[in-house]
Length: 205
Image 1: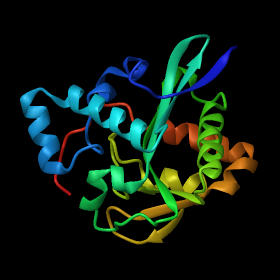
Image 2 (image 1 turned 135 degrees about the vertical axis):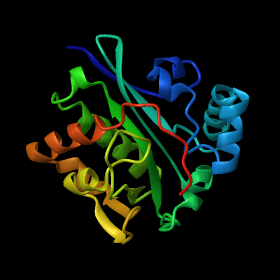
Image 3 (image 1 turned 90 degrees about the vertical axis):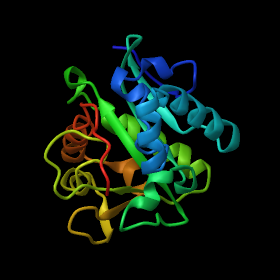
Image 4 (image 1 turned 180 degrees about the vertical axis):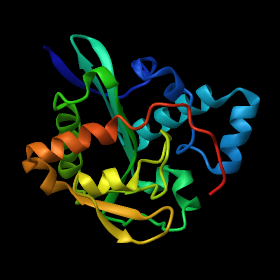
């Protein structure tokens, strides 16, 4: 089985799941995001966001291929590039951290260690760039797949709560700890990355 993890660019954006190619939940603030969806311009806004971050900051995601079939992706960036993050009650993300925006592995490919490889690749990338941690906003009342990852799943893969909230706690993972994960963490990670499957509804926080 040939595995490749390729930096996300405009050239391989089409390899993301269809619903994710035009999702701008994180990339725009709530008002702009809703306006883009209503105007049918969310796909263009997504491309513009990726292009701007690539030019200004560099790689902001990875696409996972198995035998040249795209089976998953992860998206991350410093919070300055993630307008939606300021809408969360537990913001801001720490200055030494990058925000884990969202991630996904196709169900048929979960349980094969791809999640571990993907996050370890991100960790190595960010460590080289001088960051110490990755932070994420979790959904403590998560019931169905959406752009905000379930808080319980984040905790299961080693994230620690740094700011409590009944709905949207902010969690943190020290990057060096990802380089020595054990099998039970790999299984939890596969469950986490399989949790984002459905087109999210834009809803006010």
